[in-house]
Length: 247
Image (cartoon, rainbow, N blue to C red; front, side):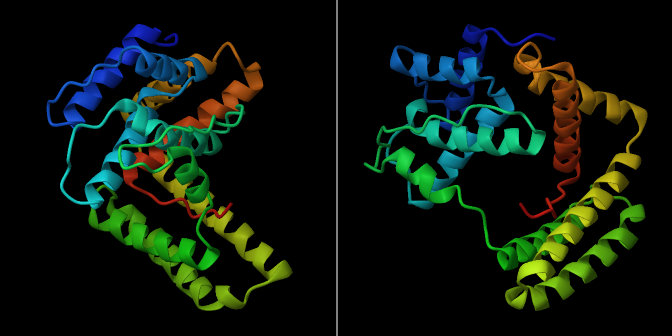
């Protein structure tokens, strides 16, 4: 499947924004159309753009009752942050995201907010989040009984790491980070092995759709690696699994 036409991409974004605004239609026209067209030109998948829009709305709702419908321009920094995270997870090499200099509806500079929040959590905070996400993944019911043993073992190792991590430095820290990467690979391999052929085909198609706009931009070997990365990201999403590896 080829890349989605720009007009269709903008129409889908407009429809999604309308739903997020409780049915209030804010047209994606003029400068807003140019902005969203640039997302399409850069290859931002629709689902990734939706995730960025969701982030903006979640932050907006936390500020209290909504005062007026959100324009798509306000979501630019969040969409680009979501895209940056997606391409790192998938392995797509891409130019650094353009930082928005526009203000959102509360007068906050969206570009400044983006640059302030791109730093990842500390290693102790990362481990705490991973343990919580593993517990949530098990409670969600998406994981079968076959996952119980590996989740128990991974959780025990992570609990031990949390007790030591604040004092871990140098080679010991690097060894811990390497172990986290190995645990992540083991958990993902178990998730992949638990899927039937129909599920694998479904996620393979989804990965190909996400990367459609990059097919002509990348060497074949790089695209194959990115396709595998996109597939595994969708596996992680399907089972609600955290990323144990620490970058």
